[in-house]
Amino acid sequence: MTTAGDSGWDALAGLKVLDFTPLLPGPFATEILADLGADVIKIEPPTGDFARRLPAVDFEGVNRNKRSFVLDLKADGAPAVIARLADWADVAVEGFRPGVVDRLGIGYAALKAHNPALIYCSLSGYGQTGPWRLVPGHDGNYLAASGALGLSGHLMGPPRRMGVPVADCAGGYMAAVAILAALAKRTATGAGAYLDVSLTEAALAMTAARGVEADPEARLHLFAENDLFACADGRQIAMGIVEEHFWAAFLDAAGDLEPALRDARFADTNARRANGPALAALLADLFARQSSDAWLELFAGYDIPASRVLTPTEAATSDQTAARGLAVEIDGRLHVPFPFLADGAPAGRVRFPAPALGQHTDAILNELGFAAAEVAALKSDGTVGLRD
Image 1 (cartoon, rainbow, N blue to C red):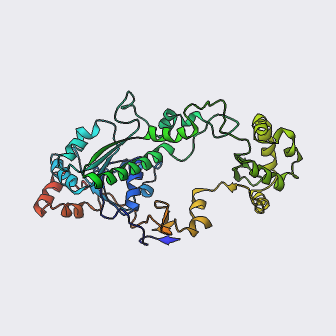
Image 2: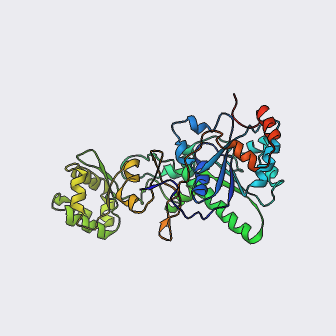
Image 3: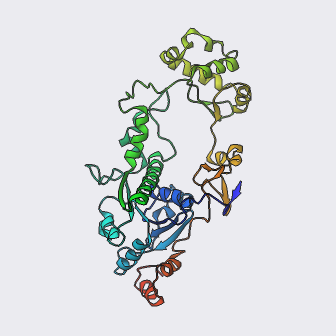
């Protein structure tokens, strides 16, 4: 396991990012940029990002490597500060409902007036246009609207939602990719860009990998042998049997424990699909006879895609994660910075943990060129800094 400050790829060193986003999707997007070396200023209201007080969002986990700047966007002195921030930045990211940023004075037009080459990304639930643009929502709503929840992940029973906020994270990834694409274009043309990224459409793009004409009732993407199975010790094993050779390997390993698996009903993919409910019941009974350890020990000598369902902590501390150097410990907690290897080493790194509210306000004002008297005035009228 590595520790904070270990060298990373720093591919985005020198990139300056304004982060006006709360909660999870936007902070996840800008954290990707920060993990890769960008200087991200997180703009927070005097009360802080609501995620600081919301246990459903891990504020520490999506705001590392950022600097916190407290700014009351509604204060009379805010426009002067916004102007200098806009001039400083290469990229700005906002995560409000359409129209809110214009009322706050941080919309694309306002910031572009100070910095024509700015890349500005709006990340919202349904996008900046269309009849749903102002509809409120969170991850479950976007998954429902994208069709993702219309496709079950299990042969038996209705669709169920994952514990991971898929639409929020997919939108964050999409926003980061869009920003990097815009940066590449700006390098070639010198032009800034306005990016409109929708969490629902990010989830829709993932759903479309199954085909947008998929019939949820047909469940053609499901296999009884490609599912989760509860074992005698209460743990689950995920089986990834899709190709025929994996089924053959599974029969070699477990066929003698349940002779019915060799029935003609399950002889090939089409037969197993036609008799899916019967096979699902048979496999559920079989796996319940032994512990997950016993099953994995049995499968170890065969080419079978079988994995124990791990907790997040188990996954972050696994031998595989450790071997690739992807888990980072800082101040007693684990982080997984942007996870890919570049030239054989982890590309992302943790330089410092999530900031305290307003921790970097004074330093940033100094970087922006505000004189001491100006800083005192901005603090006095409540434009910047924490309130007494």
